[in-house]
Image (cartoon, rainbow, N blue to C red; front, side, top):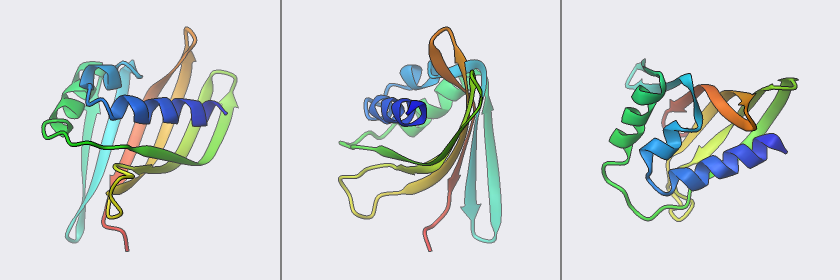
Length: 128
């Protein structure tokens, strides 16, 4: 239930193209790591700390369009009462049948009533 709630809220924030609001869902030292398939290699790009995470989202949001994104939780596990892992798929725009879909893995920690992202890994690779 927690995983569904935080990922649904995250998709709604993503749809506003508000980089600062997206970064606010991360811990101060949170890390966003993006893996991209580039021909025969996998490129890794890491953004550590809320300010760098915000800059990464700001770059992504430079060319906004009308979207309706959605997270699908495939597996969630409460490791301790305040530590949660979530695996799933993010559909960038459910309004388009050929929308980019990326796999994700999150580690979140409950802090002050909020489940903040400690680590977010996404994999951008062509669907086979």
